[in-house]
Image (cartoon, rainbow, N blue to C red):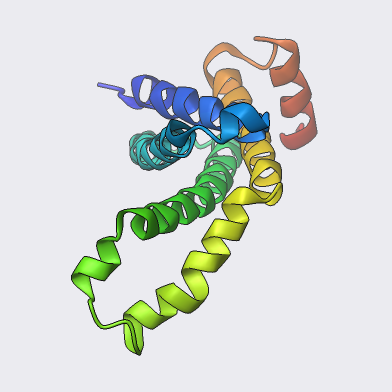
Length: 180
């Protein structure tokens, strides 16, 4: 049974909603206490789900390799899926670090603030992640993630329905897939 088509739609929805929320910078909404938690939930869960979808896609690719048929579009789709997961993993890691700081998880696990693991978080990771999330840099990265997920989806749609499934798929297909 091919689970990939089912598995991909969940992370697409979560990560697309996250990207839109990240790019939305209206102060009155952004200052709400639930805003951070909602974005963190969407990007972390979406990234985990994308990794699961990637595993189901790799199973299909292995079946195609075993049959001796592996079109170049499969490799390109797989490459863009990895780029997409990489982008969103960076964002998810930043949100996870800030969530750890806000909840005090490290304070309970490592009560000694001097030296070692805890010092790395206190002096480097917490401030860097906080800055990353609050700056417009995260919105730019989320936009790049949205572009990457769109390219990945367009290539996936082209594999299933052909490159003429929609205008975006045709453009992506013509730009990225070499014609023989």
